[in-house]
Length: 320
Image 1 (cartoon, rainbow, N blue to C red):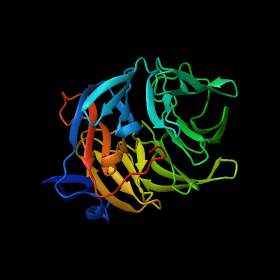
Image 2 (cartoon, rainbow, N blue to C red):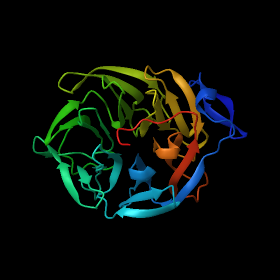
Image 3 (cartoon, rainbow, N blue to C red):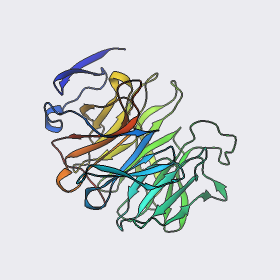
Protein backbone atom coordinates (compact mmCIF):
# COMPACT_ATOMS: atom_id res chain seq x y z
CA UNK A 1 0.00 0.00 0.00
CA UNK A 2 1.36 3.42 -0.93
CA UNK A 3 1.85 5.92 1.92
CA UNK A 4 2.76 9.53 2.48
CA UNK A 5 4.30 11.15 5.54
CA UNK A 6 3.13 14.06 7.67
CA UNK A 7 4.82 15.65 10.66
CA UNK A 8 2.76 15.87 13.85
CA UNK A 9 3.41 15.57 17.57
CA UNK A 10 7.12 15.90 16.90
CA UNK A 11 7.36 12.69 14.91
CA UNK A 12 6.74 11.40 11.41
CA UNK A 13 3.34 9.76 11.12
CA UNK A 14 2.00 7.59 8.31
CA UNK A 15 -1.37 8.05 6.63
CA UNK A 16 -3.01 6.47 3.60
CA UNK A 17 -1.72 7.83 0.30
CA UNK A 18 -5.19 8.29 -1.10
CA UNK A 19 -6.14 10.57 1.81
CA UNK A 20 -4.45 13.92 1.21
CA UNK A 21 -5.15 16.61 3.86
CA UNK A 22 -5.66 20.13 2.51
CA UNK A 23 -6.19 22.03 5.79
CA UNK A 24 -3.93 20.23 8.28
CA UNK A 25 -2.46 23.37 9.89
CA UNK A 26 -5.84 25.03 10.41
CA UNK A 27 -7.19 22.09 12.42
CA UNK A 28 -4.29 20.31 14.13
CA UNK A 29 -2.18 22.00 16.81
CA UNK A 30 1.50 21.70 15.93
CA UNK A 31 3.27 19.44 18.39
CA UNK A 32 0.08 18.29 20.11
CA UNK A 33 0.01 14.74 21.43
CA UNK A 34 -2.90 12.49 22.25
CA UNK A 35 -3.06 12.15 26.05
CA UNK A 36 -4.34 8.98 27.71
CA UNK A 37 -6.77 10.01 30.46
CA UNK A 38 -8.13 6.57 31.39
CA UNK A 39 -7.18 2.99 30.62
CA UNK A 40 -8.48 -0.38 31.69
CA UNK A 41 -11.48 -0.96 29.46
CA UNK A 42 -12.45 -4.13 27.63
CA UNK A 43 -13.59 -2.19 24.54
CA UNK A 44 -14.23 1.58 24.73
CA UNK A 45 -16.71 3.33 22.47
CA UNK A 46 -19.40 5.99 22.12
CA UNK A 47 -18.12 9.14 23.93
CA UNK A 48 -20.60 12.00 24.41
CA UNK A 49 -20.64 15.32 26.26
CA UNK A 50 -22.63 15.62 29.47
CA UNK A 51 -23.25 18.33 32.10
CA UNK A 52 -20.30 20.44 33.30
CA UNK A 53 -17.99 19.07 30.64
CA UNK A 54 -18.29 15.46 31.78
CA UNK A 55 -17.60 12.83 29.11
CA UNK A 56 -19.69 9.67 29.16
CA UNK A 57 -18.35 6.69 27.21
CA UNK A 58 -19.02 2.98 26.82
CA UNK A 59 -16.86 0.13 28.02
CA UNK A 60 -18.76 -2.45 26.01
CA UNK A 61 -17.86 -5.23 28.42
CA UNK A 62 -21.00 -4.08 30.28
CA UNK A 63 -20.36 -0.59 31.71
CA UNK A 64 -21.05 3.05 30.91
CA UNK A 65 -18.26 5.23 32.26
CA UNK A 66 -18.13 8.89 33.34
CA UNK A 67 -14.95 10.97 33.07
CA UNK A 68 -14.86 14.31 34.90
CA UNK A 69 -12.18 16.66 33.48
CA UNK A 70 -12.35 18.85 36.59
CA UNK A 71 -11.25 16.06 38.93
CA UNK A 72 -9.56 13.78 36.41
CA UNK A 73 -11.54 10.85 37.82
CA UNK A 74 -13.36 8.17 35.85
CA UNK A 75 -16.24 6.36 37.56
CA UNK A 76 -18.91 3.85 36.58
CA UNK A 77 -22.19 5.54 35.66
CA UNK A 78 -24.25 2.48 34.69
CA UNK A 79 -23.62 -1.21 35.22
CA UNK A 80 -24.79 -3.41 33.63
CA UNK A 81 -25.20 -1.25 30.55
CA UNK A 82 -26.93 -3.67 28.19
CA UNK A 83 -23.70 -3.64 26.16
CA UNK A 84 -24.29 0.01 25.29
CA UNK A 85 -22.20 1.21 22.36
CA UNK A 86 -23.02 4.61 20.82
CA UNK A 87 -24.16 7.27 23.30
CA UNK A 88 -25.62 10.75 22.91
CA UNK A 89 -26.89 13.25 25.45
CA UNK A 90 -30.21 14.68 24.31
CA UNK A 91 -31.31 18.28 24.82
CA UNK A 92 -33.04 17.42 28.11
CA UNK A 93 -29.92 15.88 29.64
CA UNK A 94 -30.89 12.24 29.17
CA UNK A 95 -28.33 9.71 27.99
CA UNK A 96 -29.58 7.89 24.89
CA UNK A 97 -27.78 4.61 24.23
CA UNK A 98 -27.63 2.02 21.48
CA UNK A 99 -27.50 -1.34 23.25
CA UNK A 100 -25.98 -4.15 21.22
CA UNK A 101 -26.36 -7.90 20.85
CA UNK A 102 -24.42 -10.87 22.29
CA UNK A 103 -25.87 -10.52 25.77
CA UNK A 104 -26.95 -6.91 25.41
CA UNK A 105 -30.34 -5.25 25.28
CA UNK A 106 -30.67 -4.96 21.46
CA UNK A 107 -32.54 -1.71 21.94
CA UNK A 108 -32.29 2.06 22.15
CA UNK A 109 -32.56 3.09 25.79
CA UNK A 110 -32.80 6.31 27.80
CA UNK A 111 -31.06 6.81 31.15
CA UNK A 112 -31.65 9.88 33.27
CA UNK A 113 -28.76 11.50 35.11
CA UNK A 114 -30.31 9.98 38.25
CA UNK A 115 -29.65 6.54 36.80
CA UNK A 116 -33.17 5.43 35.82
CA UNK A 117 -33.27 3.51 32.53
CA UNK A 118 -36.14 2.70 30.20
CA UNK A 119 -36.59 1.35 26.68
CA UNK A 120 -37.17 3.84 23.88
CA UNK A 121 -37.57 1.21 21.12
CA UNK A 122 -36.52 -2.43 20.79
CA UNK A 123 -38.50 -3.63 17.75
CA UNK A 124 -39.55 -2.69 14.25
CA UNK A 125 -42.73 -4.25 12.90
CA UNK A 126 -42.62 -6.71 15.79
CA UNK A 127 -39.09 -7.90 15.06
CA UNK A 128 -36.13 -7.29 17.37
CA UNK A 129 -33.29 -5.13 16.11
CA UNK A 130 -29.99 -6.70 15.05
CA UNK A 131 -27.62 -4.74 17.29
CA UNK A 132 -28.18 -0.96 17.60
CA UNK A 133 -24.75 0.59 17.17
CA UNK A 134 -24.68 4.39 16.96
CA UNK A 135 -27.07 7.34 16.89
CA UNK A 136 -27.57 10.99 16.02
CA UNK A 137 -30.32 13.41 17.08
CA UNK A 138 -31.61 16.12 14.74
CA UNK A 139 -33.09 19.58 15.45
CA UNK A 140 -36.58 18.07 15.72
CA UNK A 141 -35.36 15.68 18.45
CA UNK A 142 -35.74 12.73 16.12
CA UNK A 143 -33.24 9.93 16.70
CA UNK A 144 -31.47 8.23 13.82
CA UNK A 145 -29.69 5.00 14.71
CA UNK A 146 -27.77 2.33 12.85
CA UNK A 147 -28.53 -1.37 13.23
CA UNK A 148 -25.76 -3.61 11.86
CA UNK A 149 -24.84 -7.06 13.04
CA UNK A 150 -21.21 -7.92 13.70
CA UNK A 151 -20.40 -11.42 14.89
CA UNK A 152 -22.82 -14.36 15.07
CA UNK A 153 -26.41 -13.93 13.95
CA UNK A 154 -28.35 -17.06 14.93
CA UNK A 155 -30.88 -14.94 16.83
CA UNK A 156 -31.46 -12.39 14.08
CA UNK A 157 -35.04 -11.48 13.22
CA UNK A 158 -34.36 -8.87 10.52
CA UNK A 159 -32.90 -9.96 7.18
CA UNK A 160 -31.23 -6.60 6.49
CA UNK A 161 -29.07 -4.02 8.26
CA UNK A 162 -30.49 -0.51 8.11
CA UNK A 163 -30.81 2.96 9.55
CA UNK A 164 -33.93 3.62 11.63
CA UNK A 165 -35.67 6.80 12.74
CA UNK A 166 -37.39 7.33 16.08
CA UNK A 167 -40.02 10.07 16.32
CA UNK A 168 -41.57 10.17 19.77
CA UNK A 169 -42.55 6.57 20.52
CA UNK A 170 -42.70 5.53 16.87
CA UNK A 171 -39.90 3.97 14.83
CA UNK A 172 -39.63 3.57 11.07
CA UNK A 173 -37.02 2.47 8.58
CA UNK A 174 -35.03 5.43 7.27
CA UNK A 175 -33.04 3.44 4.71
CA UNK A 176 -31.66 -0.03 4.08
CA UNK A 177 -29.62 1.15 1.10
CA UNK A 178 -26.39 0.40 2.92
CA UNK A 179 -24.41 -2.76 3.60
CA UNK A 180 -23.33 -2.42 7.24
CA UNK A 181 -24.18 0.94 8.84
CA UNK A 182 -22.05 2.06 11.76
CA UNK A 183 -21.30 5.67 12.78
CA UNK A 184 -23.90 8.31 11.94
CA UNK A 185 -24.23 12.11 11.97
CA UNK A 186 -26.83 14.73 11.05
CA UNK A 187 -25.46 17.79 9.21
CA UNK A 188 -25.68 21.19 10.89
CA UNK A 189 -28.56 22.29 8.65
CA UNK A 190 -30.39 18.99 9.10
CA UNK A 191 -30.57 18.38 5.36
CA UNK A 192 -28.03 15.57 5.20
CA UNK A 193 -27.22 12.44 7.17
CA UNK A 194 -23.72 10.93 7.02
CA UNK A 195 -23.27 7.20 7.65
CA UNK A 196 -20.20 4.99 7.88
CA UNK A 197 -20.72 1.83 5.81
CA UNK A 198 -18.13 -0.33 7.56
CA UNK A 199 -18.17 -4.01 6.71
CA UNK A 200 -16.10 -6.43 8.77
CA UNK A 201 -15.24 -8.34 5.58
CA UNK A 202 -12.02 -6.90 4.15
CA UNK A 203 -13.60 -6.96 0.70
CA UNK A 204 -16.85 -5.35 1.87
CA UNK A 205 -17.81 -1.67 1.80
CA UNK A 206 -15.62 0.83 3.65
CA UNK A 207 -17.45 4.01 2.68
CA UNK A 208 -18.38 7.40 4.07
CA UNK A 209 -21.90 7.86 2.71
CA UNK A 210 -24.18 10.89 2.46
CA UNK A 211 -28.00 10.80 2.26
CA UNK A 212 -30.55 13.56 1.68
CA UNK A 213 -33.19 13.90 4.41
CA UNK A 214 -36.73 13.73 3.02
CA UNK A 215 -39.76 15.59 4.45
CA UNK A 216 -40.76 12.55 6.50
CA UNK A 217 -37.22 12.07 7.82
CA UNK A 218 -36.39 9.07 5.66
CA UNK A 219 -33.13 9.02 3.71
CA UNK A 220 -32.63 9.05 -0.06
CA UNK A 221 -30.15 9.87 -2.83
CA UNK A 222 -27.19 7.90 -1.50
CA UNK A 223 -23.79 9.35 -2.38
CA UNK A 224 -20.36 7.93 -1.51
CA UNK A 225 -18.12 10.75 -0.27
CA UNK A 226 -15.01 8.64 0.39
CA UNK A 227 -13.97 5.03 -0.12
CA UNK A 228 -11.25 3.87 2.27
CA UNK A 229 -10.81 0.80 0.11
CA UNK A 230 -10.48 -2.95 0.66
CA UNK A 231 -8.23 -4.63 3.20
CA UNK A 232 -8.36 -1.65 5.55
CA UNK A 233 -10.37 -0.91 8.67
CA UNK A 234 -13.21 1.40 7.66
CA UNK A 235 -14.87 4.28 9.46
CA UNK A 236 -16.36 3.61 12.88
CA UNK A 237 -17.73 6.46 15.05
CA UNK A 238 -17.84 10.12 13.97
CA UNK A 239 -18.44 13.61 15.30
CA UNK A 240 -18.84 17.18 13.95
CA UNK A 241 -17.05 20.45 14.60
CA UNK A 242 -18.77 23.85 14.66
CA UNK A 243 -18.22 24.22 10.91
CA UNK A 244 -19.95 20.94 10.16
CA UNK A 245 -16.73 19.10 9.31
CA UNK A 246 -16.72 15.34 9.91
CA UNK A 247 -14.19 13.70 12.27
CA UNK A 248 -14.15 9.99 11.45
CA UNK A 249 -12.28 7.27 13.35
CA UNK A 250 -10.67 4.68 11.07
CA UNK A 251 -7.62 2.58 10.40
CA UNK A 252 -5.42 0.35 12.52
CA UNK A 253 -1.76 0.30 13.40
CA UNK A 254 0.19 3.16 11.82
CA UNK A 255 -2.88 4.23 9.86
CA UNK A 256 -5.02 4.63 12.98
CA UNK A 257 -6.46 8.07 13.45
CA UNK A 258 -9.12 10.68 12.88
CA UNK A 259 -9.78 11.42 9.22
CA UNK A 260 -11.32 14.88 8.88
CA UNK A 261 -13.64 15.68 5.98
CA UNK A 262 -15.63 18.74 4.96
CA UNK A 263 -19.41 18.22 4.63
CA UNK A 264 -18.81 17.76 0.90
CA UNK A 265 -16.19 15.06 1.49
CA UNK A 266 -13.07 17.18 0.94
CA UNK A 267 -10.06 15.73 2.78
CA UNK A 268 -8.99 18.24 5.45
CA UNK A 269 -6.74 16.71 8.11
CA UNK A 270 -5.40 13.54 9.69
CA UNK A 271 -4.99 13.19 13.48
CA UNK A 272 -2.98 10.13 14.60
CA UNK A 273 -4.27 8.27 17.66
CA UNK A 274 -3.77 5.18 19.70
CA UNK A 275 -4.32 1.97 17.79
CA UNK A 276 -7.82 1.20 16.49
CA UNK A 277 -9.82 4.35 17.37
CA UNK A 278 -13.52 3.63 17.65
CA UNK A 279 -15.25 6.98 18.22
CA UNK A 280 -14.70 10.61 19.18
CA UNK A 281 -16.43 13.73 20.53
CA UNK A 282 -15.46 17.29 21.41
CA UNK A 283 -15.44 18.41 25.01
CA UNK A 284 -17.41 21.28 26.53
CA UNK A 285 -16.76 24.40 28.56
CA UNK A 286 -13.04 25.17 28.51
CA UNK A 287 -12.51 22.04 26.41
CA UNK A 288 -14.60 22.97 23.38
CA UNK A 289 -11.48 22.56 21.25
CA UNK A 290 -10.44 19.29 22.87
CA UNK A 291 -11.24 16.09 21.01
CA UNK A 292 -11.90 13.01 23.16
CA UNK A 293 -11.19 9.66 21.49
CA UNK A 294 -11.93 6.08 22.48
CA UNK A 295 -9.16 3.78 21.29
CA UNK A 296 -6.81 0.98 22.22
CA UNK A 297 -3.28 1.80 23.29
CA UNK A 298 -0.44 1.44 20.75
CA UNK A 299 1.21 -1.55 22.46
CA UNK A 300 -0.13 -5.14 22.19
CA UNK A 301 -0.49 -5.34 25.97
CA UNK A 302 -2.39 -2.05 26.22
CA UNK A 303 -6.04 -2.05 27.15
CA UNK A 304 -8.79 0.13 25.75
CA UNK A 305 -9.09 3.66 27.06
CA UNK A 306 -10.06 7.30 26.61
CA UNK A 307 -7.69 9.82 25.01
CA UNK A 308 -7.85 13.55 24.34
CA UNK A 309 -5.99 15.99 22.11
CA UNK A 310 -6.26 19.79 21.70
CA UNK A 311 -7.22 21.12 18.28
CA UNK A 312 -7.67 24.56 16.70
CA UNK A 313 -11.42 24.19 16.15
CA UNK A 314 -14.46 23.90 18.40
CA UNK A 315 -16.90 21.05 18.44
CA UNK A 316 -20.62 20.92 17.75
CA UNK A 317 -23.13 19.57 20.28
CA UNK A 318 -26.89 19.61 20.58
CA UNK A 319 -26.40 19.50 24.36
CA UNK A 320 -24.45 22.32 25.99
